Amino acid sequence: MLGKFFKKPADDMGGRIPRGQTLTTRFPVLTYGPTQHYAPDEAQVRVFGLAEEQSFSWSDLLALPQTTLTYDIHCVTHWSKLDTTWTGVRVTDLMSQVRLRPGVTHVMVHSRGGYTTNLSLEDFTRPENLLAHTFDGQPLEDEHGGPLRLVVPHLYFWKSAKWLSGLEFMDHDAPGFWERNGYHMRGDPFQEQRYDDD
Ligand SMILES: Nc1nc2c(c(=O)[nH]1)N[C@H]1C(S)=C(S)[C@@H](COP(=O)(O)O)O[C@H]1N2
Ligand SMILES: [Mo]
Image (cartoon, rainbow, N blue to C red):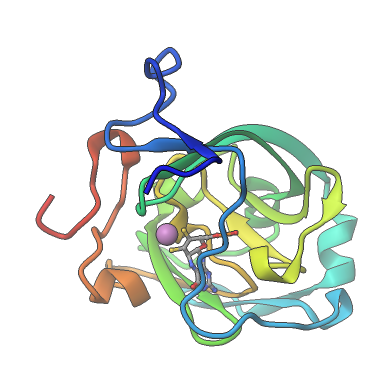
């Protein structure tokens, strides 16, 4: 239903709106299961699998360079939102602290509450990807994944795991939560990779 907050783009905004998407100025909340509530100092990102095991605490994360970036996001449920601004730690800056074992090709991203999603190492380590704690200059709301979520803007937003809790490095691909339930293993919005047969 196209309501007050949705409008069909007159054009594709110079190629910024993938086919099948509708613009929104709102910020819809999409969560499978309950919203997680916990304090920032309880946030932990555990690195495991084919990597030297370690855990990043909130203060470890804040000690890394903080980066603010603005980009468009695209949800597989057909909404896109332009010019969203996020602050956090670049995945590449986190990865400079991680010692991978040979043969890593993919990562399973884990969230508090049990949500998971898979990414290739290449998609995971793009320079624009963030472990974000701030949205539009404000602490990220719990509903949107606060205190800490992943943001991977070049793929459908289900890859941007809220309440980030773990990074499991693997030498093969494996489906996460939505991928086991019919979503595409990669999810590029510009190729409309919505479902596993797209
Ligand atoms: N932990 C967790 N992360 C998640 C989800 C979820 O259900 N649990 N939903 C995903 C989906 S399908 C989308 S579209 C976005 C929605 O983020 P938002 O609620 O901030 O808009 O979060 C993604 N990350
Ligand atoms: Mo989604």
